[in-house]
Length: 112
Length: 116
Image (tube, rainbow over all chains, first blue to last red; front, side, top):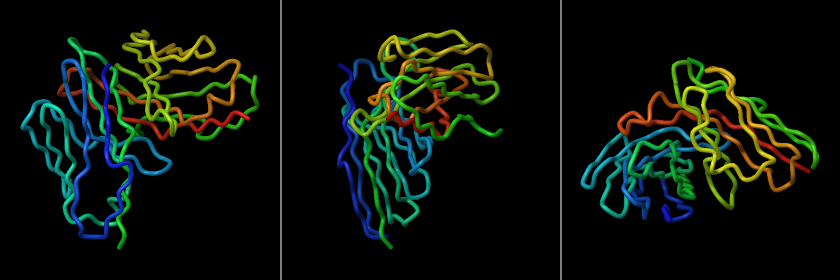
């Protein structure tokens, strides 16, 4: 069964304290791995898509990496406005499918 | 573009009542998705449409749930009768394509449903 597990469930950082969020996946035929950010009371907002092991993408203080079994979202020198829940999702299968399997998310709190 | 628009934003109803949630996707997006988010199960896909046709409804929990897309700019998710365990945030999302390099979902703000 396809599965996505995120860790930790919650993370508290001081402003400027860098860290990483983990997304482990077990799927048959990974077609893409997605990172979304979700603020309270809002829908998830797209951050990155990764397609193959070794790929990396960056956006401001965020950097996403992918291996054959997991993805990391590295946060460098975070600011309070980076506080949110970060969701990882995978698209898997042998053909185009609209189904994304989401992890439970990591809730990040950055204190000033 | 105004993004994906959902209504109502909040709905409180009593067990047994019919609930209808509405969604307007982004113009030009051929795919529309309904997701449900709970603390216990996270985000789960309920159903998705391509060009107004349901493609995969395997996530619809039971016959009490139904979804329609009468045209490219409107979809409904109906629960009849509603039960307390249906309490969740329901999200609608759309995307122009499932091709892997273009499969980016844009989510609406969600409809928070509370069934008493």
